Length: 351
Image 1 (tube, helix red, strand yellow):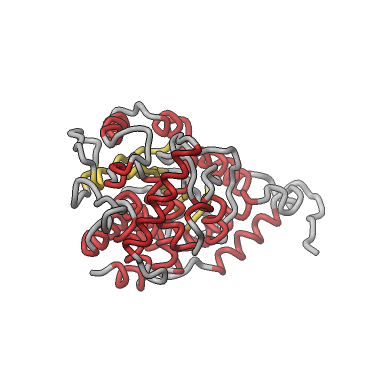
Image 2 (cartoon, helix red, strand yellow):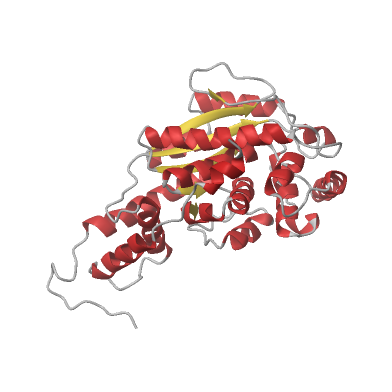
C-alpha cells in the first residue's frame, strides 16, 4: 500500500456529532462559549470519535527519535551523539516530557525511526529503515521509498496504540538538527523565504541563524522539490522523525482519535499530513504555538488556534503533553457539570 492509497481511505469527522456536542455544551449551566477554545476542542473531539460521550482517558505521546545528516553543516551547537543520549533517557523516563507526561497521565512511547546510535532498551520501538538522513545541503534526505515506508510505519503505530486503548495521541520528536529540516520543509510548504521561517533552534547565535538560513536556502535550491508534492518535499528535505509524525497523524485520523500537535517540527509534519490527506485536518489539535518563527505560520496554514501561548520550544512533545490537563478539565465540565435544567435556571440563548 502507498501513502496515497492509505490516505484515500480516511474520512472526515462527523459534523452531526459536532452539532450534538455543541448543543450539549449549550445546556451546561454556565455562560455560552465561556471556555472558549476548550469548548471548541471538546466539540471537535466528539466529532472525531462520532460520539458525544467521548472522553480521552488513555493518552500517549509518541516521541520519534532520528538523526540528521545536515548537522555536518554546523547548523547546531551539539553533535548527533546527543540524539542517542536523550533517546536513552526517554526509555528510562528521565527527560522533560517524561516528567510532564507523568503529571498529565500520559504514556511516553519512544520510537527509533533512524538513530545513528541505536538504543538497546525494551521500551524503544524500532521503526528505522536507515540510521541517518542524507545531508540535505548535499543531496536528498532519503530515497522516496524510505519516505513511503516511514510514513506508513508511523500510521501503523497510531493504529496499534489506538488498538491498545489510547484515545488521545500526541506527537513528539528528538533529533539534533531537526529544526533545520523542519524549516526547510516549512519554507517550501508555505512558499516563504527561509529567512522568515528559520529560528535559533536549541540556541544558535544570530550569526549561527544566518548560517543555518543559508544552508536551508542551499538545500532547497539543490533538491528543488515540487511544492505541490508533499511526499517529494519530505523525501528531499525532511527528517525521519518528520516522516514518522506525518504518518502518526494519518493513522490517528484513520483510527478516529484526536492527535495533539507539539511544536514547529511536528507542525511541519502536520501540514505535510494535511497536504497528503485534507481530511486529516479534522483530527488535529494545536497544543501550543512554538516560539520558532515558523510556529504561528504553520498553525495559520492548518487553520488551528493553539490552546497555550507560553513561548515554549523544548520539543519532545512537551507542549502537547502540557495541553492534556486542559483537555481533561474541559471534558470534566462537559460531562459532569449540572445543566440549566438540573438547577432550574433559564438557559442562555445564542444570538
